[in-house]
Image 1 (cartoon, rainbow, N blue to C red):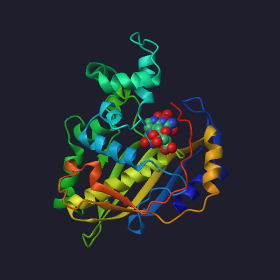
Image 2: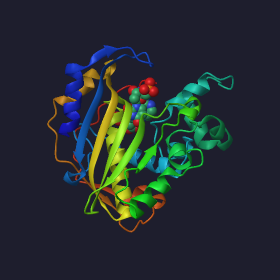
Image 3: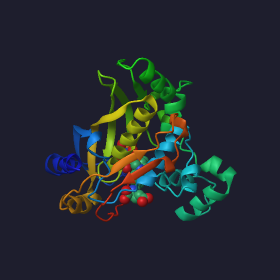
Amino acid sequence: MKQYLDLCRHIMENGELRQDRTGTGTKSCFGYQMRIDLREGFPLLTTKKVFFKGIAEELLWFISGSTNIQPLVLKNVKIWNEWPYEKYTQSSAYQNESLEEFIERIKTEDDFAKQWGELGPVYGHQWRDFFGVDQLENLIHDLKENPFSRRHIISAWNPAQIKDMALPPCHAFMQFYVSADKKYLSCQLYQRSADVFLGVPFNIASYSLLTHMIASVCGYEAKEFIHTFGDVHIYLDHFDQVETQLAREPRALPKLIINPDVKSIYDFKYEDFKIEGYDPYPAIKAKVSV
Ligand SMILES: Nc1nc(=O)c2c([nH]1)NC[C@@H]1CN(c3ccc(C(=O)N[C@@H](CCC(=O)O)C(=O)O)cc3)CN21
Ligand SMILES: O=c1ccn([C@H]2C[C@H](O)[C@@H](COP(=O)(O)O)O2)c(=O)[nH]1
């Protein structure tokens, strides 16, 4: 995807070196925007293999309103594991378990999962229960009933609850837009902080999938995903991986096929999505900064 490679090049060429919360250090820019036409294919990077199943299961988990990693872990999605583990290792309950042993306990012991698998009121909670407001339900209702509204918004940024979250939301604010002919749905996301190598490929695919799902249940077609960034950065220990990707020639994008019989946003399962014609270069390993 040219837009993504342009973003990587932009940061490599113009970014400033700065310290960050995790201690790793980044090259960073402030403010950037990508526009992705969803009619040209599904934006799953081809310059490395991206774990679509993990992205889809994470999105279904947000939609379900869950904020406990147990359902993800049971589906073998590992991307949120480090954060509850970090908290656990700092508690008096910690018995020197490795990350793998901790995750095994989350899988098999419900009481342990209830206590230690919780991330606090993160995305799923805010989307479905922002101080009692089901923002997702309202959004879908309004997209159908009042398509030209300028208030089609979901915010995960709840300042009163930031202190209770394992990580304050990065993809924090989204807005939807129905075309004048009521044919198309577009989505714009504001992401306050973006890990370009690990997080952004997930975020692009996740919001593009969400746009397709909402379009499908509201009777529209997905048109554009606009991705707007605040602090957009490449971690210092991801430079080699980014260069490897920049040396690869992007291939044709795959197609997303959604089961058209699903009429409610809450009824989707992973099996209702099919990615066709995905032919990526091999995956590239990288360390996640916690
Ligand atoms: N530093 C940092 N970057 C992030 O992208 C990030 C966070 N923290 N914290 C919260 C979530 C968790 N996210 C993550 C975490 C890990 C991967 C990751 O390791 N991805 C690998 C392997 C995926 C797999 O196959 O399990 C990848 O190659 O994409 C991706 C996104 C996105 N977010
Ligand atoms: O969906 C996500 C979630 C997180 N990130 C990245 C962005 C930053 O590198 C870290 C969060 O650290 P903060 O100090 O809270 O900004 O996680 C992402 O890119 N996408």
